[in-house]
Length: 87
Image (cartoon, rainbow, N blue to C red):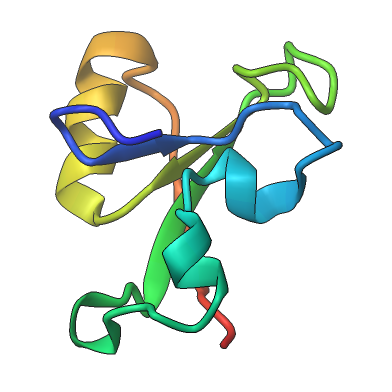
């Protein structure tokens, strides 16, 4: 889910898949996605202190500004890496 800074946090619920973890609505999954506002890249951070599937293991940011803001408060020496969103 996204917070005020634009942070998307992947939850560890594998039963609903990654689309549910990213908070995508049913309308978006059924092809009613507004492509004019779609994200083409994401910035990801992996916190190896947590096991895969733990809510804090992976952080996904919508933009570098959101990543920078999160890092200032949570992990000043951390880094997020940019990845292309595949459609």
